[in-house]
Image 1 (spheres, rainbow, N blue to C red):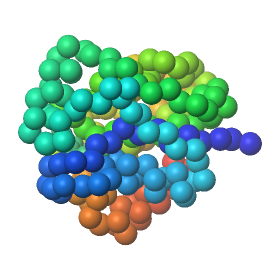
Image 2 (cartoon, rainbow, N blue to C red):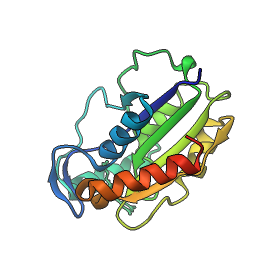
Image 3 (cartoon, protein in one colour):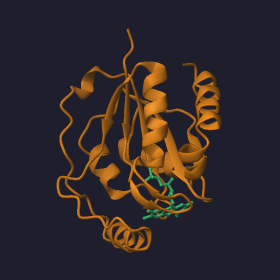
Image 4 (cartoon, rainbow, N blue to C red):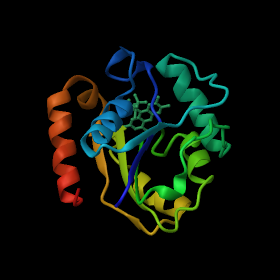
Length: 174
Ligand SMILES: Cc1cc2nc3c(=O)[nH]c(=O)nc-3n(C[C@H](O)[C@H](O)[C@H](O)COP(=O)(O)O)c2cc1C
């Protein structure tokens, strides 16, 4: 029996190209993937989330965190990480990188027997090598081909988003 986990970081509030949203773009994809695979789902959340809700101020905070290589404290995952074979790891593209909280998550665990399937939402930059950054930070058994999708498609074109997730999962052998 193989067991899959979907882990994601995502922001609601104001996002580029979609305005005020109550569910983040990456969260939408994470939930589609988890529902299709009947996988467990975990959202990476800051212990003390002081991120601004507005897009412009958030970009400034995120850039200074990236420059500082910050590792914000995150909430614990209750489930036992060791039980999973494949981890679908999703995040928005922030300044051509992962949000620093995703590094906080990665650095908590031993990935040596895990496969990672990365998925990224963005507004034009695509994957930006985030899959390679995941490989370097986690050093897992394998990194599968990632999925990248415009955030506004995940948010506003759910049918297309679902179809693209289907195609990706099939190609990856799920
Ligand atoms: C802090 C920040 C930095 C971003 N940097 C980029 C970027 O470098 N390239 C890009 O294509 N999109 C960038 N975006 C847009 C997000 O990747 C995009 O809106 C994403 O879908 C947001 O996902 P979420 O709602 O799950 O947080 C940035 C957004 C934020 C908030």
